[in-house]
Image (cartoon, rainbow, N blue to C red; front, side, top):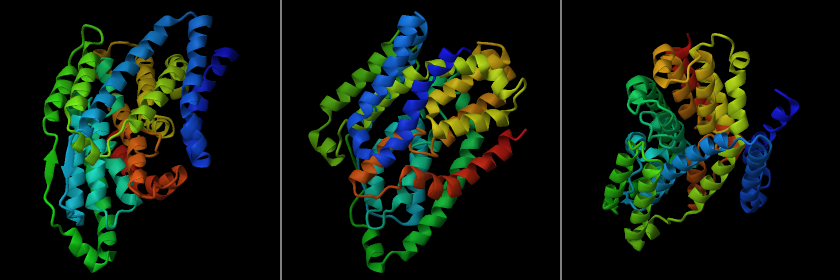
Amino acid sequence: MTVVDYLILLPFGLLLGAMAITPVFAPQWWLKHYAKVALGLGAVTAGYYLFVLHDTHSLWDSAHEYISFIALVGSLFVISGGIHIGVKGEAAPVTNVVFLLLGALLANVLGTTGAGMLLIRPWIRMNKYRVTAYHIVFFIFIVANVGGSLTPIGDPPLFLGFLLGVPFWWVAQNCWEMWLIGIGLLLGIFYVVDRRNFLKAPPVVREVETGENKWQIAGLPNLFFLAVILGAVFIQKPLFLREGLMLAAAAGSYFTTKKSVHAANDFNFHPIQEVVILFAGIFTTMIPALAWLKHGSQSLLGSHPGPGIFFWGTGVLSSTLDNAPTYLGFLTALHSTAGTDDVTSLIVSHNLALQAISIAAVFFGAATYIGNGPNFMVKAIAEQNGVRMPSFVEFVLKFSLPFLLPVLVIVWLLFFRG
């Protein structure tokens, strides 16, 4: 690679660095200018590919993947915003564990974005008398990330893999054991932490929390629009029919949902707007990074990398960058290592490595706010509801390292050590 080839990687690094650092040290500036930063850096890369390399093919491929990604995430966001769950106000530890488990299962149907947006507000209301940052962080761990490991709908990286040819049911058939271990361990850790918090709560609060209100759901007609999205996922041709159906379902949901339901959910488009803009920059600036991984994977990973290399490599970069482009990068690297562009052949020859990439992208996406798109949205909604959320560094030091990392190590030891 030439000096210019390395320099064109700079916009990608600058954008990801800005996403990690600027919200901590200059939050107001970032809130005002993040669109200019993301789209500006994306324009630099797009201009280089368009006017210098005259490579419209790479730009088109990235644009196609971005549109498919946003259509799925955005439509699930809108439809989940049209469903309101009224809670009983019963926040005993066992109830919380069951709620998180149901959220983890639902994430595979609604996606981590849809499940996160649907459940975060009732989750906060359930625990309103004693809600703390760890309630939100474990919600991010379980519902907004690890839970969605069983279907391509579940998490953005897996959906991108599906778009590139990984069979729809391959994830569930090959990764259910990792999902079960990961969810089981996280729920067990949460129960211990939550029980300590619950026992410290004043008795009068605990009595109030044992509930007078009823569980109820409003906006059930949106289940029809959800079914449209689930059916659209399987459509491959003609081009953009799938995405058109998803966006049509989102529009139908938005305009037919009662205003009272949106008001009860405090629904607005700001969280998804941030994701749309930031990921436009990410998908564009990552084009040369993916090309570098494809051509330099052997020197980076070695000639015969084991599944553990793919697990930790994908994982670390998913947590420090973003798990969707990281998944694409390591899937590209695996293709190069295997010497084939055919996904079917890849599954036969490197099935365990593909499992490692898939699980690591989803699990490690929970380690930081920038690891996965829904993390941003959950954090924003929690702060709107008065929950003091940890900074980027606090999130990692106080929660990811002591609680999430041991789970990741156990998954590696059980499945990918060899």
